[in-house]
Image (cartoon, rainbow, N blue to C red; front, side):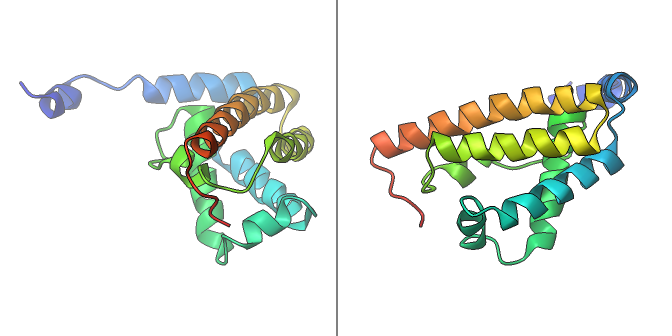
Length: 149
């Protein structure tokens, strides 16, 4: 039996895990969509982050859809996102201060949009993501990968 056949016969635990996270945090697809849209509205207006995004994103609809799928996967374990976030960030003209600002806006928005438990849940993940992306960007810079600016 190959892996595909096995996955067809073994029920996924993902829906049960997603349901448990939703029950514990109050997060669902609607809340995550609202979070993503409100957060990136702030990012776009931010004097430090806005220009970095504006230089790279001209059509925000697909980006917001992709980020909603990303946060669905990260926060609810839905598996909706299929991408390579590290590759998208390597080479960006950013330093840790940019990630700190990103986190400040994210924390603020999560507190406004999510339940307290939901805000804690997504913020913990955002903090890990920011640290990971910052390390990848810095490692790439030290390896000689040019900025994409």
